[in-house]
Length: 294
Image 1 (cartoon, rainbow, N blue to C red):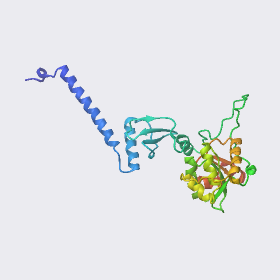
Image 2 (image 1 turned 180 degrees about the vertical axis):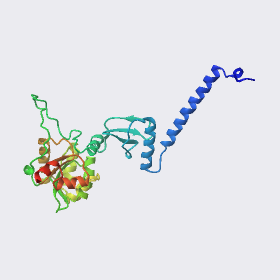
Image 3 (image 1 turned 90 degrees about the vertical axis):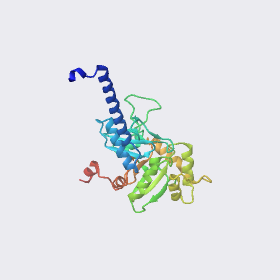
Image 4 (image 1 turned 90 degrees about the horizontal axis):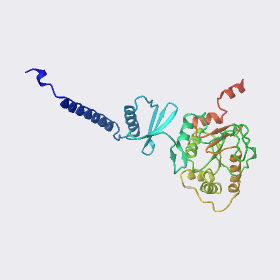
């Protein structure tokens, strides 16, 4: 008996190829299923989703993966971009992710956190093109402001009384303002917090409750936990909130938080960590400051 006399038919060979292809697909599917099985920890989940993503998109760099803050979605940092992938590494989207409860643009805030030099999500308005006229013409948010026009009322002062002062324009419904409050406490600075109503009437009601509370500092921190007191009457602090609103509007502060260094009016837009806040409050370490000290 010779091999040539018993070669499999073309039909038989095709059937074997189909079985092999099906088996390979099954192996890949099983591999992805094993990789994306729910681990015991958030760090383990991020590692496994990263491994699954690399199987599907081997040419896409994954610089960081976070899977414990956005519900069923993992945040992926890839070079200077963000995108999101579900925990099975099957569905991916590129775009804006919004927190409807905190009413905040999580993508814009995160991009700003990753790149503090970038002003994102309307924190500053663009300068209109040359010759453009009309009521919609708005100046770019300034890098420095004069705080002297703001009244003493309308602010809650808290933090380290001996530390350098930062004036913070915030909204108690802003998730990143809440996070900023924690970083300000760690930074050891004196905070003059001036509420503005980015999110409308509800934010204003919360701000009035804080401003008129018997202990405004305790009320401020309670407000960030969703436990703001209701204002029983219109106090001077509540009426002075109008000045905060006008100041923010006149200077193009269309997002929160906005941080102003009291010593010279220098402005930062968006969330910053404690180390950055401490350095900024003390005068910073920018090239401009270096040149001024020469």
